[in-house]
Image (cartoon, rainbow, N blue to C red; front, top):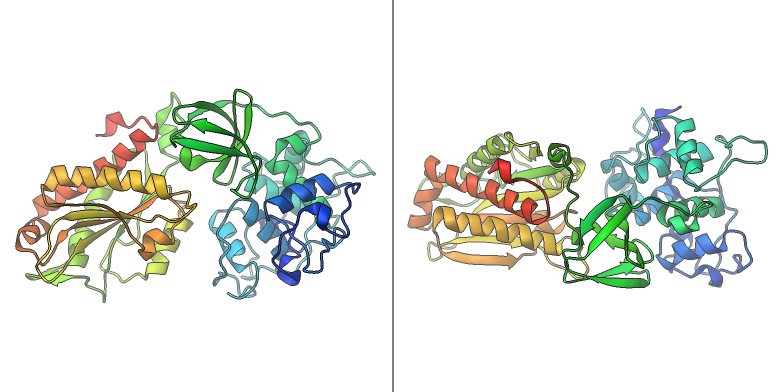
Length: 459
């Protein structure tokens, strides 16, 4: 029961070798409507989770490699597939699946080998496939191959082979991997299409489209208004399969309130908050009146940490000492921590002629974090205005690296202008920095309260 097992990955992707144009399965020259896996391949192709060659072939009998599997799983879970450096010596930044591989590692979906390699061209067998899907879709499988196989069988995703075994060591082909992945995403494709809708949530968007798959590429199955109660069956990355009356399908979890339970502490303990004190080390940030931005924001962040320590929340600071950390690494720290919220703390400067507090969030077309980021920014901004009574510069859209590149609700707070005498007096004061820390902390609590969490006892 090899632990590297996670290293597996998912099917698909002739894409890296043959091109990037997605096709419906019916248009693949080697996947006819009568083909045994037509429905599942078509379903994945519609969402561009799998694709074929530029010449129109899917190659359903082609063996799936670890790199291809990683890309397919990554697409199904909507992980960041941007090509980049990885932690593996044999996966360079230009490898077609480098982004999906690193994202899946950061999401604890897969891992590599003890020698620091990933072996992206190694074939995937059925046992590894079962473990990968079990980890990706958060099935309880006891960390064993047999447990993973049973998790798929009991859910109607897979079944044994002709000899009565699961065929753990049998190499898997693209068609079969597509079948298993599609069934994991959409339960209606399973051998026994039945799931339990056990958890209640509420729609927080003004109008929420329900879709047949986990991306906006899939067709709408209905729409729900703000305040509508839904029942949740399971998660597909950041998407969840829901039901409300006669409407069923997948929606992004950012547009639902948080799940509430009687044992609230266990729910809060699942939330990771990352606090990011800007600058540090060789980068002092803005400097004025003998005060350095890096010192002000670190002290404030450490005070926020002490407040968070009194709650069940998980929390992490990107730095706790006077150290330089690159913008990329700040984002990576947040992603590796599987953060649910990210707050970067800064101080402003503008030739001494500007003053006030402002909070930024990143907004882009179809960015699933935009609304939650805006909500978090508004809650923190309001608390800071109450605490410091500085000029209100507002909640603003900002194209700033640490909030743009993060994959969770993220904001950047500018406490005040270090080169403005009035603002500087508060930034320089330990007592006022404590008030700022409380404001950031309360703003975070306000955000979670709005999302449906019970945080009233932590104010």
